Image (cartoon, rainbow, N blue to C red; front, top):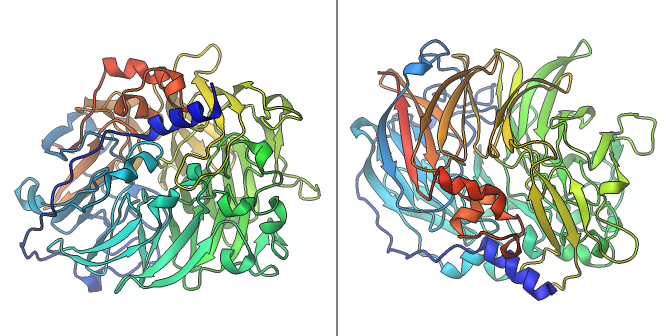
Length: 618
């Protein structure tokens, strides 16, 4: 197979049949949002006032815990959970993210063409308004993989949507009318929008997608009032553009030094070097710091980009007001496996070695769970949360060592060999990761993290590729399969982040690609690719409830209270990275980068769909 044929195969994996765009339909209904702007102030916990009943942010709170204090649904009565109403989105692609609930209104988003619905909770989800942007369908093949969107954000009386064509739009939350919009990227260069924005104070933060197209990643802060750019921090490049002070910005306790990114790239490769931050953003109100991760370096062929390729694959801590970096930690220097570092950063306070720490917990695609001091960036714990991980034996935790904080790569599974590119076999995990961007949850009741995992290994063969703007710039073929001797390809684990230890583990036949919800009722919810909403006991992992929804679940389970009754809701709609084989009709590995035949059995359990299902007790 030639490199052009390989490139075409990658493109097919990302292509989804064109959607028919409909003219924007805006309802003129004027609504009274129960929680006034004065009641949406930031609390010390990082939640918003009223958020115990609402779900007003993509992860429920700024700390990304995905934890609810609601207790009406609990481990004793969850077995009686019943669907109360449903809503079809009319889009047949991968439905990631979760609805928002603010007062008596639920806001639901879809994949491309990125429709936003406002639903009236007082009338079983009747449509109050609908926004459907007019977008060029040529953006579809630029989206890798599938046409997903991870959710909308709320703040300042507006709903914020990161459209596929990299337009950030602010909608009036009462009417759906556009208030302002700004181009956050250029699709002709491969820049697209898939992120869930985050509103903090007077800013809305949003990343960019396109690492597989040679996009140089960046995170941008816009003014919520008018959309004016406040700051933009690049993942790669000169200090002035990465917003780094070489003395004050630290890496594992040491200053990063002058031009710390440029010195780790060969020539101008950094200009097309990836590092796109398309994942989740967290915020600590006390420290006024935001946290997020940058993605893989570009290309996937490591021989074409010698060096550590900083600051791809990095945990970032930035000042909210200025965007200046306070500290960075690169998890996978010179990434050789496409282990994106964009997964969520969960902010919790923990007692470690007798000392209370303000920590950040991150479950990376590379298979390691990291516990980091979020004030200083000190690495406290780094352990495998998937025992099958073999690309590295461990993370060096010896602070006196020159390789402190670096993964100890097993040369047998390196894809950067001397001489010609060769096929490296048996690497665990695959490019999907031991966990993808679907978020974990944390419960302060158990002090455990609940992590959706994937058990898939791969063969990885780099090839030479030439950069062309707007074309796939991957440079590797992969084929994937379950670990040797195993048939289950996923599961849910409970993780002790202080010890770096699995407490319990539940297996699933397919990767768990949904986001997790933990509640004060002692229940943990998640979805499966077959389409089941599942509830398990937070302490033991014991199965408590399951219900088959119309399509596979890659959405994030959420909960809210309305008129004294607790509800649980989730978006169904198989697709995304795990389900691209179904959404694009792929059956052979030569058609795409992710060997979709691994998930071929999914067609026996589910099919395409787009539906919101809302549950409650009778």
